[in-house]
Length: 160
Length: 458
Image (cartoon, rainbow over all chains, first blue to last red):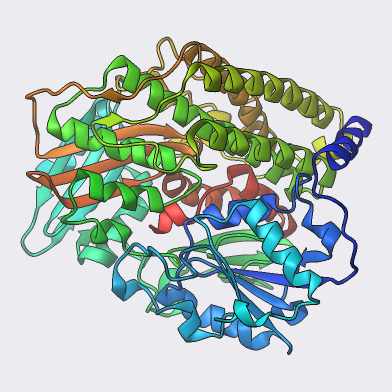
């Protein structure tokens, strides 16, 4: 156990992102609306010692009631439409929606048209766009820390 | 007994293992794998779509028949009750097993889960904390990929196999490429086989590291989880350095490969793999000496050897239950010369055995990669042959177990694509493993299988 902790301390000191300067925090609720599992695997590693997003005040929370940001992966399937909307409606204001990955952004979606509920941004307003197939933890870290630096406010050019 | 059922029974008597069953229009095709890895195709056509079930002979065909019933309207005589699987339109009573008794109640979990997890629904029938039965309802992420691929040419269909699941992208696309090459009568050159085997083992490397991290997370051992998550990150960076993509996307093609690993990349890859092997060994030792972690693992989520065989369990989960099955041992199209499945000393079929299985397989993967990455890798083209057939079958050992891809073709167009992944085979096994255990242990049991939802749902 001591070796594990020593290794982790070493990783944090030598390889992790630089320590944050500001003190905001944002709670994230992730919803997989029909992904290929790539976005989930990369989002998981954004919490690994190489990125350690918790240090910037990001936490994945278990309930949309506790969330500031709804982070959506995958193109929305017909079967995930209602659960996704229910999660969004359960969030307190102010709330933000992040489209995570190319499928959530409506790019290059594969499958039968009839299995999808339409573009995410036609279902709920999208504030933050994180491109990639899947987005790398670097991209995730950059997008989220930028947002956090602004205290969760979305810049004008993000909403276009 | 119908000729179809007799053929299936005969194949089983000959030692074949069930691999897949699918419908295309009015025809149902079952694929069984002989001990030498050759597929045996058994088919039956019924214009009225009434076909005799084989679930009594092969319980592992349960999900396959339910899917064929939902998507193609096949009525399987003798499969009672034929519960919906892909179809979500019916009420709760139609797809759950009735569980009655004093204080029995249901706990509904999902489709949205509490962490960063794919979407799917679990309905636990419990008394107190004790799970009596689990009904798993997936297909929330059903994207119709198999049907969308119909009409595509070999290259065009590749994207659908890859998109089925990022975590199994190489396994699924190699199985797809093998299916087409089987149909077109072509065989891989040694260099092509070596390149694909390297990719498959790189996928297994990050996947097994990830699975060990996930099991640590399943018991709340943050230090172990973070250590192995860090190693997973390093393995994915290695993938990107060698191929340009962290999940090895776009590295597999039908009939050849553009993958080029020059001497510098080989040297970097070997050095990085040496470091990863040393560090994962050291981290693994720490887990072995962590008594409170180890105490959570034995006798949880037990799958007996007999149940694993009947339910058609595959991959590390099956081997941890004592089934020495591994598609790598019979993969004539890949570079697994002299491969023999490994097993831990203790094949109890519980969480501990499944965890240890990952650890011994990791060492094997490091050995295979060290052997195969001994010289630069050049782009390659498959040998053309003249032994063409209408239906091609690919069979690959993914990190989660045997994955089967079947291509039915019309010239160079896909008429029907079937992708039956290791996750699809093992989901019913997870449900079986949960029964009798405590509800709070389910995340741990689930993570000891660490299946994908995406490649089951497709």
